[in-house]
Amino acid sequence: KVTQLLQNYPNSFNPETWIPYQPNQESEFRLRIYSGNSTLVRKIDLGLKPTSNYQTTERAVYWDGRNGSGEPVSSGIYFYQLQARLRSQAGDYGQARKMVILK
Image (tube, rainbow, N blue to C red; front, side):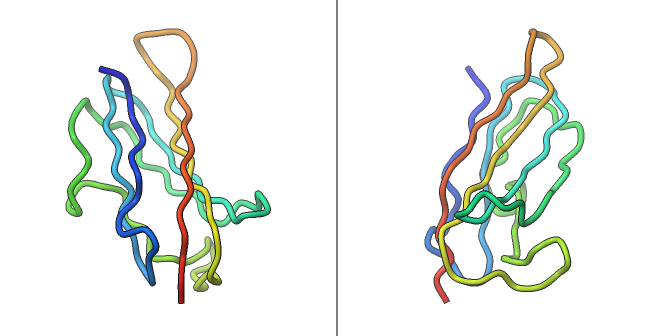
């Protein structure tokens, strides 16, 4: 298996969403959310995560539709990017997907 970033749900959403992922090895993970014009909106450091399934609402990354200052973001297209520093192989992991906020 390979590490995977899955589609957020629900998509489109208002005001909250869950972002599932599935690491294939223990790694340090972080999630970054960007606006449609590539401006960083929010950083979520997930820390060290073991190989597991992070797809349910109890385990997936939760985003409340707010920026790093706690303000609600506007309607539009956003991108989320999962990054990991892989321990057992050279290099890092990174994958991005698109989501839509409708208010």
